[in-house]
View 1 (spheres, rainbow, N blue to C red):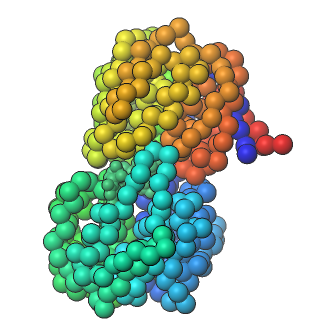
View 2 (cartoon, rainbow, N blue to C red; view 1 turned 120 degrees about the horizontal axis):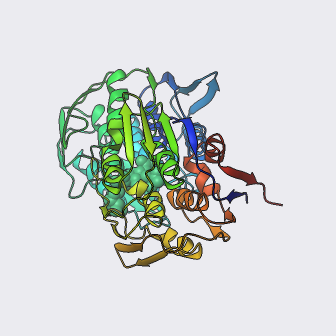
View 3 (cartoon, protein in one colour; view 1 turned 45 degrees about the horizontal axis):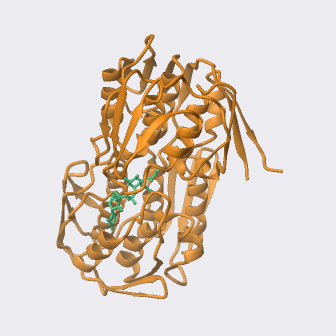
Length: 419
Ligand code: EPZ
């Protein structure tokens, strides 16, 4: 298993570009199952999760390949409508084929995703949504089995905000008969990007990006083209990399408006952040203050930037209280940061970070999940000495060669292939 070696102490300076959003590309690729023919996507990042999705789509009758800067997905009716365990266990987002298969073919057999490092991550809200739209759903042998003559629009009220649940509901309702109203819908930019692609395919959707979305089902959708929205989590991670090293970094090809909560917190901490219509520039001041954060659904502070922000707070003056309100176990990076010398006390949903505890010292650390990996790389950028982050296959799921992007800004960082 590959590792990343980081030699700390280098200020990062310069400009780096954001890739397309993993969490927008995944649901949009599954949405292609809603219409036969060639779907064409640009700005699709080169990530393990994208490759996993392409394999799953292939097993569902949709071949795909890159033509220059375009990912072409060629959908034809599959022999079977089964998303098998081997594929879904590697990538929980595989549950996002439930809505499209059910809406298009009236049946779907999707492996229950199983838990993951950051929490149990149930799919009860996805199941309830499909039942609400008229599907008959049973579970057998670790699989969800769903059937429906034709889905029928209805009112869906989510008891808690769910990004994937909202996305499955959008895709299923697009081909349902009649009107569907989704209330307490997720407002994440990735949900909006999915809605934009569905609309390009001919879906009738209003209100995406707000907590109430209405969908008027149509009989048929058509393949279309779409440019994937920039990855706000990667952009935020790169911005924090510039900040934690005390440098001046511009992150371009991003949507600054998607990172308002991070920008506000970094400005509260004392960083200077300038924005224009497609880039953010961070400039560190001589020292920065600890600030508290609590993760929340968009436009609140993104849970996917919690671990990275915690690394930043280990270098702040004062104490930061970090509350994780989305997932029940998303502090796996804490003990690894403590190995680097950070002073952090984790409790169940809260971690107390005492900043500037005499700086960080290099040590071998282990990645446990995607965003924890990024947090450890960021800490390695300022730890004295050589930090080795192992199991970085987690990192490759969601970052397109992060080490190359950081090296282009002056980081002393390299990927080491396992013997
Ligand atoms: C999406 O996951 C993202 N993944 C996650 O990013 C992100 O952290 C999360 O949204 C929250 O923003 C993709 O888009 C592929 P949820 P998702 O449904 O859809 C509970 C990353 O690092 N819940 O919004 O799975 C759930 O357990 C990944 O890129 C239920 O209880 O998240 C969680 O506590 C990690 N029942 C909360 O809701 C359900 O049926 C929010 O989950 C569904 C979810």
